[in-house]
Structure formats: C-alpha cells, structure tokens
Amino acid sequence: MSKVNLDTIKPWITTRVNQLLGIDDDVVVEFVFNLLENTQFPDPKDMQMNLTGFLNGKNARIFMQELWDLLASAQENIGGIPSIFLEQKKEEIRQKKVGLFFSLCVYVEKFERTCKY
Image (tube, rainbow, N blue to C red; front, side, top):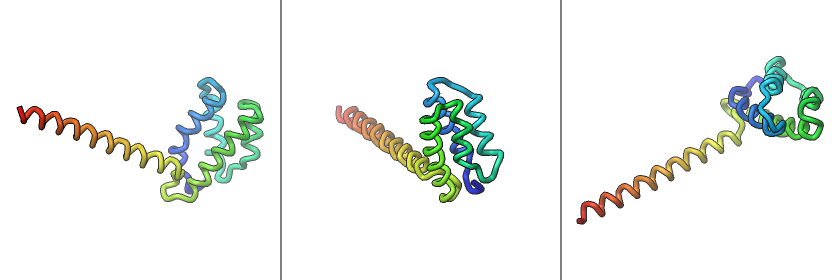
C-alpha cells in the first residue's frame, strides 16, 4: 500500500460503492476510505467481512475483488496508479485528439468551400 496513490482510486471507490448500494451513501464510502487509510497493510478478508453488513455478502466479495485488483496494479506502477486508469486516460486523450482533428478537418473543408466561391 505504500506505493498506492489512494487519491486516484477514491473516485472509483465512491462510484462503485454507490452503484452496488443503488444510492449515494457517504458513510459507507468514508468507511472504506478509513479501512484503507488507517493501516499500511489492510487485510482484504477483514475488509470484506466489515463491508458485508453494508453491501451484502455477494456485493462485498465483488467489490473487494475489484478493489484488490486495482490496489495490486497500483502497487506495481510508477505513481501508484492502476494500469486500467492509465489506459482509460490514454484513450480519453486519444479520443480528444481524434475529435479535434475531425473538427479541424470540417473547419478546413468549410473554409476551402468559402474561398472557392
């Protein structure tokens, strides 16, 4: 956990907990944050048991598996950011570039038509 940039994972935690609960629940989200922040080596089994009362057994298991995969990935990467988040950001940047290029092409095409007449 020492290498994990928890701030990059917190938005995912918030979104995922709220999806699993079906409502926005800051109390449960903050509880997860505290479980991760209050120890250098959080125990996934303990966390899952603590979350079962809020998320139910199935959802707590699903959540902890997803969270642990993200934490393991973040621990291995420079900057402590999960690989999937880095890939998503790269794709977002690529899409913006494609959009800008398309907009530029449309602008140039309109400009050329205007100049021909």
